Length: 266
Image 1 (cartoon, rainbow, N blue to C red):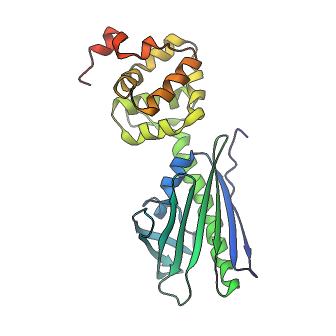
Image 2: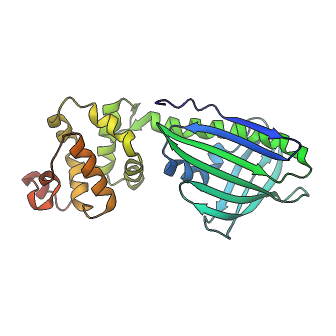
Image 3: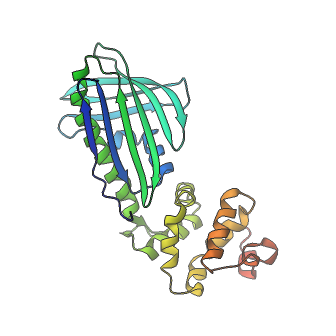
């Protein structure tokens, strides 16, 4: 599978009181897990015309609680729960309860699986009493996961350049945008690049030759020099060697070119 359809699906078992939902997202599991466990939830958790999420707080640790609030059909609602299991970036489990509505808490389990081109996210929401109460929540999950997939895919679909312009994510635009982000010491972009795994190789291969790549990647080489002894650096050294774009000496600070040495303060 090389492309991600993104269409979310959710089904409710009205007799067992549980929901099974899934979606495939064009983003690595690390990125999806972050969107599930941060204030980004307010950007995607909702069903247009029915409910939205306006606030979310939480500390992603076992035994710690989270809280979300917003409007449902024009009326305020409040959700809260406790994190039961936190295994980034593959699994998350928490309780879920409407504080403003009588009823027992339910349990939501998220499974994240790395697939070609992104992540398959599967959600199992159980414990609804009465069982039939899961029907409306099922609609909410399907709409919300669709919005999550669209939001994360859109952010990867365009890349902001140093000039602030958004351009279509052609392979070379993606690669060069990464280098510009590195030059600007954009920590989030660096984190995303290192989590991209093999997906980042495609943009690198789009360069016609090693010379073109090395010209665009000068700032990347400086970063590798600084973090050579970190695990992520070793992983990228292996990838660059496989592409035939550099050798061991090119990544060794003891054999750095004069151009790199002149930028030690950068």
